Image 1 (cartoon, rainbow, N blue to C red):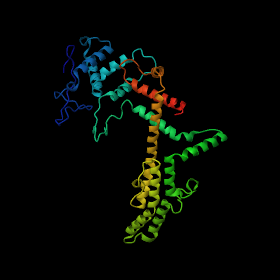
Image 2: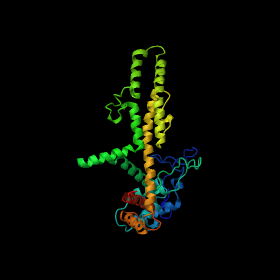
Image 3: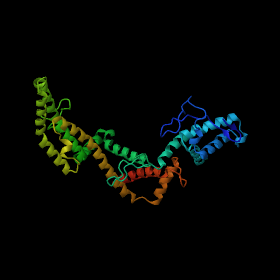
Image 4: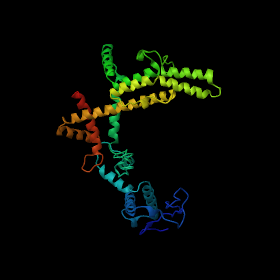
Length: 368
């Protein structure tokens, strides 16, 4: 094994498995072998040289020929370890130290900064332009992901903001009255209420005292419980009993078909994306399952609708933004640690987040 001031330290060789697609193995602790492959062969030589210069300089050695065998061996092993974890470790480390030299304010650790750089790499797009759309695109952690998350959080906040109201009784009465008017015109809340009335609340609706565990008579869940009791007392253990029970479930299910057809017609007219297949199944249990899925779909549909309206508000608010306001937003990004130097990465992401927050406030101020 060479370890001199001219050639440096050569690490122990490792054994090849001979398997197709696997060039080297034996890197696990305690499994190194002599004269069968070299760990240096799979390292970028330019990156390795840069790493050796960095490690030796960090301990006060300016040239390889000035180092001792022990220093060369330690530096080589450190470089190999770092390059096995990340192929461009030392280029990234030097870039990081240069970028944050004389930096004022907080700065991320090198490992945190290094993990963020993967978001800026070229990434494969799977099933590109399938049926005219970039379906299943493999770039979900791009630089706009945080912006999408912030908008999604804002949407959730708007949907639940009524839960956090804390005011005196007079204001609370006004808020309740205003909220009732809002609910009256909310097609999504109306459909939720209609489904719950069919399932267990009955004709009294919200004023009903019935629950899912104790549903109203003639409701869907009540009919399901009634037929289950019939099965236990009449058909259980009887030959062909299960088939007769399933037939009862289908007949009971058909009795609710007209009500569900009316439900679909009503809420399709209001703009909801609902069809009979979304709320009606082949048997009573299937219909109950479909109605549960529809309640989940309503939540998703409402968020998407609110997001579209929010984007429309922002587009209108953008027309009221001046150049000075754009500059102020960049200044806010700089104060919070964003690097605004030319070519710096991540500037657009921080700026877009700041702009979204500004547009939300501006939209509210303009009462859009």
